[in-house]
Length: 337
Image (cartoon, rainbow, N blue to C red; front, side):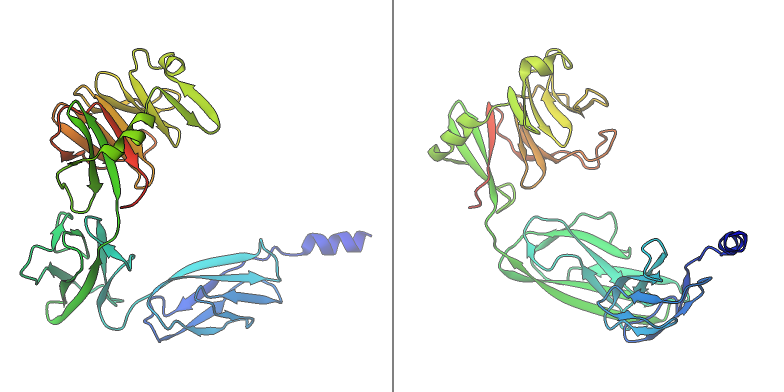
């Protein structure tokens, strides 16, 4: 028994680790993974692209550029693992977007991918070579490694160009075209003293509202004095115990958007109350499809993406949808048209 306990006590803890060479590979280039674990007898590798291996120190080739999570598991023990993200660059500079379907009035970010293992100086110049006004750039610069923009015309091909200069001498010109689709969009319904109106979001962007008598049913259903959230009904009188004087509210993801001498957002327990709009708010609604809040004041109807930060600070500024100044009720039509 003493000998057995001594042997168990002397058993070393296995440390799992490995190294990749080259650390910044290109697509089609073989990568050698050197197993530097302190022990173990069984090896299980996954390379993030569907490839696997049981060799101690395998070699693997990534066929396409991108980021791949490589994981080594030792002795089939879930706790004996080590992971490393490998960034595989394209041999030829290019730029990509996470989306493959493009529609009007939605922000898209395009990122340059350049194989630059020696950290040479890179210069970027983005451009819109078309003659028509088919896109609007929303990023602060057109000389960074990425650009954000939205398209303004559907059912057409929109070109985007990038010029890359490496180390002041090697220049690459890249031109890609993206087809902009015409797809059905949601609508916002609005009631005024003159009637009920519908406005598509966004096809086209900021189109004038049109009178629509079919909007009456949804507008009559819409109200912000009682809300069901997580299986419980919240009433205006209950909410007023935490927010005295509240005029109306909507709840989303443990945040409450409410009308009280303007428009506010706070955590559902009342913490971190932040004012969104100081003008009196006559109506509001939440769009759970596109994650936006819509509200009306004397200057028109406005929208803003849902607040996502813990302290309810804004990441964007409100955008005016129209100039209707007498809106008394707003509702979202979830049916795409």
